[in-house]
Image (cartoon, rainbow, N blue to C red; front, side, top):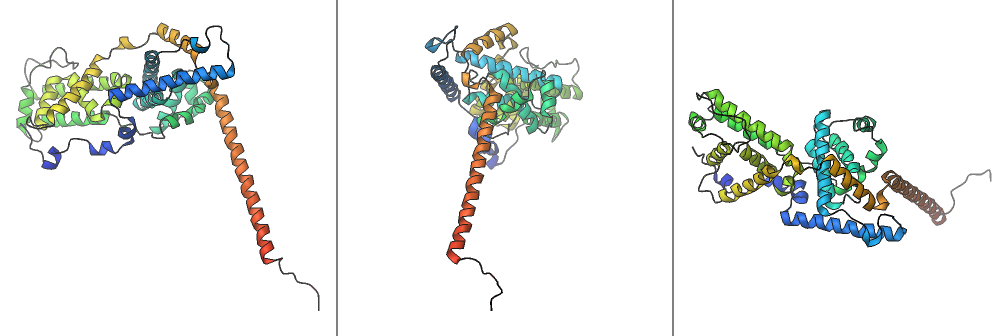
Length: 382
């Protein structure tokens, strides 16, 4: 069954609401532009560190000058990815609601900053603390720091403004979870015979998901109504797992819209079911159908290609962090000191402005007296 959509809906090729969001305007890229931005950030960091070492006259027994063994761009991305996994594991253990938001804050931060300038192990806690506040989970910074391995609260707060600057003060993160839930509800309604029983019968006759499908549902010996609902629920559960891991540890948020990510997760979970759903909602003769399906398949391929084996092991991470310790920017080693110095400078500047305003008021008062003469006085004269 194919639903005849209104002309204004059939003509719509983009999510107009999403296109107005800061996520689309600031954090959506093509693969080429994303790679170019990261390369530029990496090169600028290397150049800055070389200048800092030269200006400070730093003499390292390991390496100095142009002989510094800098992290490669690929090694930087591996460290960031590992920090994203740490965020995901921490929120799961502590039952905090903001893994996707925190991960996107971290990934966005490292589009304009290098791990050699701000190591991920120092920044990910700040991103998670900020994400908790964004998601209305109010935890005192001292309690948060304690739960994050007895960290120093001052270190978490010291990087907060820098993270906000890198995020361009845009805290909204559009996620695919709500879209996936919408797909789930619509498929459940069809399984219940809404809006008609014809679609329900078609769904019941669908072929087996296939051995490559992530869904754990398998066809029963007898087809009953509840088995159709079970298939929908199993596909949703498998898609949720994809959004909870591969979607957070790859670049899909930068390259695809939330709705595309949601459909891609369902495509991996149960290809047969979602292909039938597309046919019922997206007519075969639609001129946009090939483009939409190709985009979703590309996103699905990126999600499916991810495996836990791509993450750094504890030993590999230790080696890269040791390498990072030898090549990192010397000017950002003590973030607390840098933060307090900047804060002190701002206080001094504000005091100077206040003093200047006071002198201007006094000068204005004196000028008024000079123009109009002294005030009237009363005396005992005749």
